[in-house]
Amino acid sequence: MAGGYIFCEWDSVQKEFPDFQRAFAELESKVIEKCTNDWFPKKTPEEAFGGLTPGPGQFGRTSILPRLFKGFNDAELPHWRQNITATGHQLILAGVRSGNVIPEDFKVAWIGLAFPNTELTITELKWQISGDKFIRLNIEELMTYEKPAIIFEEGYILNEEEAFELYGYVESIGYQRIVMLGSAYYRVIDKVLGDCGSPI
Image (cartoon, rainbow, N blue to C red):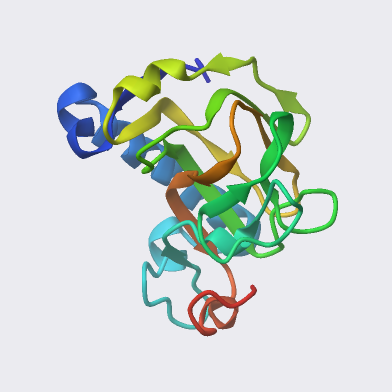
């Protein structure tokens, strides 16, 4: 992975980054292949992937659900909006299970982050996926955008039962939405059939 990214307006991402659809399609192809190999290795991806309505013996896809993550206060997220009550360097998003891992039977295709606030309270980010650590990224340029987003040129796969941690430098306290962009894939449909906002 090259590790490239762009800063952009979320509502004009295709204009700012015309390769976005290609990058997301390539990421989705990789995660569908991984889900097939891990969950249904005797099937082809076409047989194993059931989209939004998977049948028996298939896995499905949905949006990235906030309940797969916990926020800066170590609480499971019912939505992407957090009331950040401390400044400085801190963990602001992590896998929801013990050890900051993504829950079993879920994989996440992560293509970027959106910050749909009128004010951005975070100035730097860095993240860790399993044992891989990524360099700090100053995001103050995003303060000049109305609907800021960070889009990755290739994206990442957050694997089930592997750790994910997103750290940030919080400049000022207050409410902040940090929205994971991409899609989530699930092996067991019953885990995503609960009430909206309920724990997974």
